View (cartoon, rainbow, N blue to C red):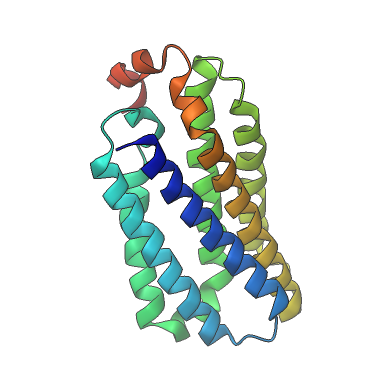
Length: 192
């Protein structure tokens, strides 16, 4: 898969996440049913995209080693969110928190791989990975007594995750052109 297609796909996911965050912030009165459908459709789209991208990647597999599993999980979760909004509404903070926590851990794994090749751009990924994990933990704890506070926090978290993906999309070519990346890609014992 070409760098341009890879970058455009991550840019599309970034725009989608940021848009959901903005909609959640601006329209806080949105019903949880609508939010569940919106999130379910978006998560389903992202899951399918990650699965397809995993099969299309020819190189740099070490950076995307968890995309297949994450894609399958997101696809199943998206379908469940679309089919069972009533059940999802009660567990929404935990579901979203777990999603962001896992995404942050996957980004930390990418940072570790990029750290081995001393990529100069890796620290932006580290900062947002830690922030994404922290936001996920806060959502799982669900300290929100008011629905508006939950909606604001959820919107901010979507925007943060979108910015993280945007940074990754913008730096993807730089990450993959750093020296020794091919060596890491061949070291299957380290990353698989």
